[in-house]
Image (cartoon, rainbow, N blue to C red):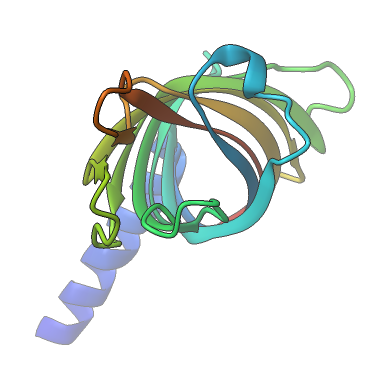
Amino acid sequence: MKKLVVVLLVAVMGIGMANAGLRFGVKLGTNVNHLSSNVSQIFDKNNRAGFTGGVMAEYMTPLLGLGFDLGVQYAYMNSEISDNKNFIQIPLNLKYKFSLPVVGRFLAPYLFTGPSFDFKLDKNTIDAMKTKTFQTVWNVGLGLEFVHHLQIGASYGFGMNKIAEITIPNVEPVNYHNNYWTITAAYLF
């Protein structure tokens, strides 16, 4: 009898969460990054490709199209600096999904923006370079959701604080920010 009550409670909670717009899923993608010391280097040919993957949760308010998503992801940034390659990222985005007549059941475009908290996993091995173990990135992106489950998104992350600083005697220090493009595919259950 107790097992039946537990199963019924779990089923009711699952139905309630589904109706409330809370979903969970997996996310995989690629990123293109460049450690830049100024904005003009963002589109440099030396940008490098990496990958990202992890889990996410999304909550959308019914009828309004407004909600948020939260994730925990591993990201490999293919940086020319060996001390800045492996990160754990925790993005938290405000999201707006557009309701389209006729095709809305199959296709929903969305916009999102918010911070990502990136924790560096690599240790500092270069004496002249001081690297930070944490950076904050502001993401701005857009995407499409297909058949209420598959989301394809693209975003740009603006590094808000320096991730590395090179100090050489008698030379002004150079600060680096990690800026990156990310293209992801997520499947939400």
